[in-house]
Length: 403
Image 1 (cartoon, rainbow, N blue to C red):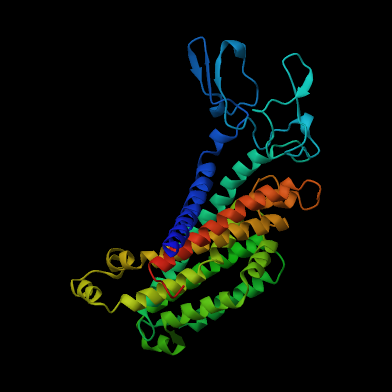
Image 2 (cartoon, helix red, strand yellow):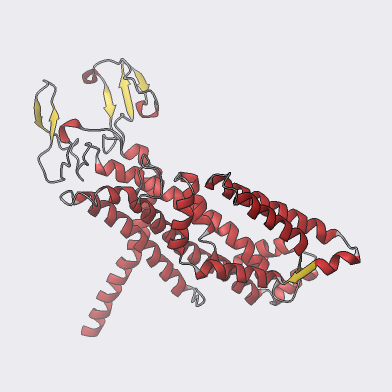
């Protein structure tokens, strides 16, 4: 009987632990999606003399004329503060347990009401930390989500090409005269110091596109004298060597190197996280496709005349989605941590954009304002832990061994 009770207690705590990750992720997403309804200095609904208005939807900075609030029904948000609104009576780091002040209806300074209290404290300018965490969650989540989607597109395309066409098939013909000419032209152009770092990146992308176009045109030419200038590579060999180059360099070092060349912005951070986070997705998709591409139902789809893309979407994807979902969760968690690290170091998003990493960075100098580091740090750490816990749970459930 004692052993049975012990196992019941263990099972109870395991259930609680399992649902903690899902609940925390849901709360994180809920706060991000409904940020404007959670923290806003403008009321949600105002009903005056039978007319209904929604002030929080107004972008006007000037205060509109309206009847006295005593004659109106007003519904405020949960936190009546915006992330950029300064409370001048609670500047210079008002702590969550400190005494906070406000101006009452008679113009006298008194203790702040509980509804308007800064429950997580303020920063030096009097901005409410809770409101900044709410909106910083939205920014960090948008950056990580977009970069994860783009990483999946890049890694999915390369992984499918490497796994489907495999070694020894569909060799790529690279005409080294054309490729060498374009590379030599790019080196001469970029070494003249006439372009800014941002223009050099754009130039590299344009030249890479031209190189691809020239290769495709040359592949259509069947004249025999062109083949002596061609080098043949396996698609799988090229993609694998390309991914090994990215894997050989630590991701954070590669991210910092790219960030130092470009001006920090939302799009640049998404782009950098995307092109540095596709390697694991590509390798997993390649191994999964090579594992099932010789199954009977795949061979039957080939015989029926289905193309490669239709086979991948209709036949392969339903069989490999658990593995892909797990690696996407890992990538998503890694992007959240990478964005927070960049913002913490001051090389990520611009200074006027509030993110969770920038909130933690704002308190690293002022040790007395411990709440600036503790609350955003615990919030984002709990989310990353929940993502990894959910990924580990799914990996064990579907017995995925190659992640």
